[in-house]
Amino acid sequence: MILAAGRGERMRPLTDHTPKPLLPAGGKPLVVWHIERLARAGITELVINHAHLGIQIEEALGNGRQFGVHIAYSDEGKALETAGGIANALPLLGDEPFTVVNGDIWCDYDFARLPAHAAAMRDNGDMAHLVLVDNPPHHPNGDFLLHDGRVVESAPSAQHSKLTFSGIGIYQPALFSGIPRGSIAPLAPLLRGQIALGKVSGEHHRGQWVDVGTPQRLAELDSQIRSSQNAAHA
Image 1 (cartoon, rainbow, N blue to C red):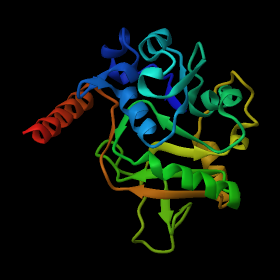
Image 2 (image 1 turned 60 degrees about the vertical axis):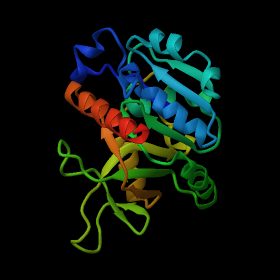
Image 3 (image 1 turned 45 degrees about the horizontal axis):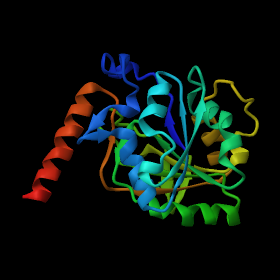
Image 4 (image 1 turned 90 degrees about the vertical axis):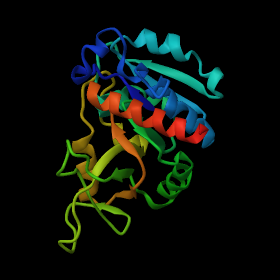
């Protein structure tokens, strides 16, 4: 599932007429980078939720055939926040652990790593697996602690510091079963509840990751991608 329902207030005026996932970086919309990387990893059954200007997303991406995937859409009308949006889309997501990716990040994480983690979750009863990254300048205090492959509330040594949640995770459908469809619900309280129960694994992605939250960060990302593209063609 790719989350694409946010209003993108911090991205205005760019998002006044274009939904944030369709804003381009390096010559293609942010959401298309995700779709292409998921397709290369063999993850081809996709669900995209939307609200603000959502019809533009459906018109741009269609059924996904042009990318070698199949896309189903979850039209929220008004954004339901992360957990509410996932709960609303549960009928489209099936009974197995599924991946969720924020539509407004850009990342070189290898999605081919995800199926093995999903298989492990089926066996060990974990409710979530989170991909964490180094803290960006705009979020210096991080979100979660990681110790021996587990997301924990406290670490045994002061050497551990919090990392930032990348917006990439795998979840059991049951995590969202208590949320009525159509209701607004944030994700963090659900995750913290499962972390307290010891049911969340995690990994540290040390590659590229950008939270494309402001026009400045979008411009910087666009410049970065174009520079690397030019260097590759040189």
